[in-house]
Amino acid sequence: MTSNVRRNRTAILSDPHYREILAVLEDAKRPLHITELAEQLVKRDETMISADEYERQLKQERLSLHHNSLPRLAEYGVIDYDLEENIVSSRPNVVTEIDWLDEDVFDQLLAKFPTDSQSTENPIGVLEGRQAAVEYGKQLADEAEEELFCMYVSTDLLEEECLSHAEDALNRGVELYLGSQNPEVCDLCRKRLPEVTLWEPQHTWLRAPSEYPTVSRLVLVDRRKVMLAILDEPNSDSSYPEERTIVGDGEDNPLVVLVRELLGPRLDHLDYQSPDFQSEIHS
Image (cartoon, rainbow, N blue to C red):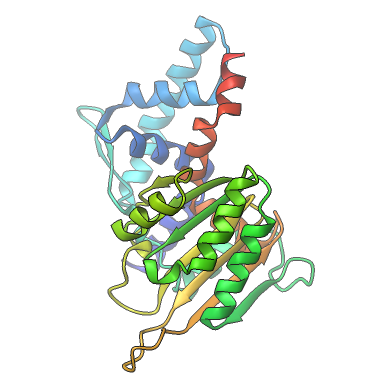
């Protein structure tokens, strides 16, 4: 993939409306007719509207999808769109085209935000070493007030103390979401953290690594603090590989905003499923 196409795809995946389209397609788990897609988008955006207004918005959404959004998403390989049949489907693991370790892509995403990454008010910090990653992850779990959003690629990264701090968060009433494509991670969490909400992320940068360096763990707390750890290649002496952890603090922090943008469809889906959101819809 050329750098221009990659940058354009990055911009697409960072746009809230495109993320919403992709979230609907991912949740559907089957191809949708453009009318079905438009209906779900209108229903997600509005709570109570008149029949005439619903039909107006539905027609407008269909036209926008057909002439703008879907052709653009298809052009950059994000979806499959049959113009003749008006059938659209998601492509699995499309986010794998965004390489967290690619400096051009990282800079392109950060450039979207007005926050100065060099500002002392919103710094992006780097922690060196596995123990530093563990300690900071425990600290974030202890600071969580409402939501703890985690992803791990292997059980090797889930030390006993990490599980204990996650248990404490659950006992405080914190909503705990954990994603992994590793069955062993999911089994361990089901046994130790029965109240956790498990899901399988579509991002292949959260699979068991086949090449290094690779993303190893991600922790997002209340959508305002984040740590993203990068794992180096294991040593031949069977010792733990080194981890470097990027951290950000604050709702406007560039790294926090970046992670929220890239995880947008998943976070939007969690919001849509939440009891508070559902009560607002039906009140």
